Amino acid sequence: MKQIILGMKGRLFRIGAGILLFAAAAIVGRLGLEIISAVLFAVTLAVSGYDVFISAAKGLFRRDLLDEKFLMSIASIGAMIIGEWSEGAAVMLFFLVGETFENISVRRSRTSIRALMEICPDEASVLIGDKEETVDAEDVEVGSVIVVRPGERVPIDSVVLSGSADTDTSALTGESLPRAVTVGDTVQSGTVIINGLLTMKTLRESGESAAARILSLVENAVDNKSKEEKFITKFSRIYTPAVVIAALIIAAALPIFKITTLTESVYRALIFLVISCPCALVISVPMAFFGGIGGAASRGILFKGGGCFERVAKADTVALDKTGTLTKGSFRVSEVTALGLDREELFYLAASAEYISNHPLSDAIRGLSDRAAAPSEGEEIAGEGVIATVDSRRVAVGNAALMQRVCATVPTPKGGEVFVAVDGVLSGIITLSDEVKPEAKAALEAMKSLGVSRSVMLSGDRRENAEAVAHELKVGAAYSELSPEDKYARLEELISESAGGVYYVGDGINDAPSLARADVGIAMGSVGQDSAIEAADLVIMSDNLMRIPEARVIARRTLSIAKQNIVFALAVKLLVMVLGALGLANMWLAVFADVGVAILAILNSMRTLLIARNSPKIIEKVNKA
Image 1 (spheres, rainbow, N blue to C red):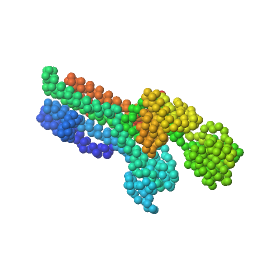
Image 2: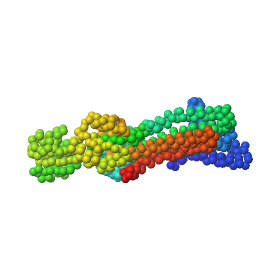
Image 3: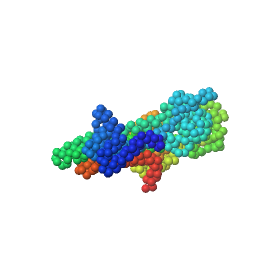
Image 4: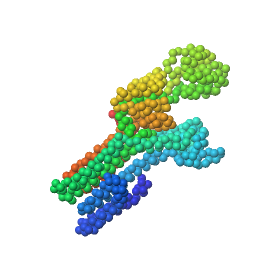
């Protein structure tokens, strides 16, 4: 805030000088020294508005006669000409106060967002041989080895080569809890290393890293205008000329019909010109969406522009992918049946055989035994499993199709089973399950409380697995064994049945068609997936599903604030216009209708910066209600 004030000190000095001059002019006028008073009011006008007059003069050459500074110049000078010295000076002085406050407010909101987004260092410590060199992050090539110390931010998306540490990812994901990383883990740029020294290999260039993508999304989002912002732009093109024409009619018509004197009619017309400035709308409405976008980014929720706020607020159906979206996408052993073998021996043989596989299920099985080692030979059969030689024994680990291949008889699969055959005999059944995310149920309940009345799961997984997850989370309907094309077709049906719109929530490249087709595509934790980012309207930087109801709260509250500003500003301006035309409003009231309303609307817009911070509490209240 101090930097903002220092940057505005020239304006603040002019305001202080203008107030002192205005007060002196008023006092001198009370003493009967009218000429000196008039001179002091004129000096007040010059000190307060010299830059406005210069800008208005430049507007003449651009033929921009309806610029707010041109209108204010005409109004203040016109008031002086007809003898309203104090009001003419007051118009420009309060316009300066209002414009200064607007600049401070906008700068403050932009500064807070810029501080949020400055999450990536400009330099990196690159390890060349045994020496470290500090270079610009933009110059670091893919595959370079960098060193990051405690308290430093990771400059480029990288994978850990050596070391371990706790990390702070709050700037990226909005998650407050530290995340532990070690050798082999990927760490995104912008992550803060809390403790431990990490040696890392860069995975992509600086401009393509996570922090750069976030910054790009937020910057582009500001240019993607909402319906309300577009309305204000179109409205101003009609509203301001209409008011100026009305002012000219008042100035000319009232004396002709002998309703008022020429001086009085000109005074009323000048009031119209002051009121006509649309700055309250032009500044406050875009500022509301800017604050909403920035506040959401602080929670790891990236809106791709104000244009999607209304769709996020109105959707009444949510369709979700299962694996990696509703579930963690990492498997655990939930049940083991040993047949003719000791459990430890079963674990050893199965874990050793899985050493040759990169399948996601293999990690869970390899973790069953500390004695496991790579087999002497083996092969992986796509879509079925692995066959390996472990201690001279032929071990097959996989599905029912693989068991048929090795002539082992198995029971009817129920879903999630991995069969283990040793020397052609079924020796064990290991049941694996994909863990449901701990916040998934609460997130679905929160969405329902916020008006998302229908939830549907669209999964490519087996029917048994999909139905189990759907039952646990109380999802309204579940469709399983779907290809990406099948998901897209189901989504089309949901869209045709929905009155408010459909969210589609996915986490991978295969979800891109559905993310693009949905009324609101939400990419979960997919900052590295180009296709997901491009297709989605929202990007959730973490895998936390609670960010979806938070996004809905932010969208609804931001829209509400923007609409409040529109209604309030128009109502006050129209009321004062009517009063001015009837001769019941003076220039002071006109100044309030312009500057005062603008300040109040801007203060209202600044509340959007706080919505994201309070969104969890808002959701909690809604759920209780």
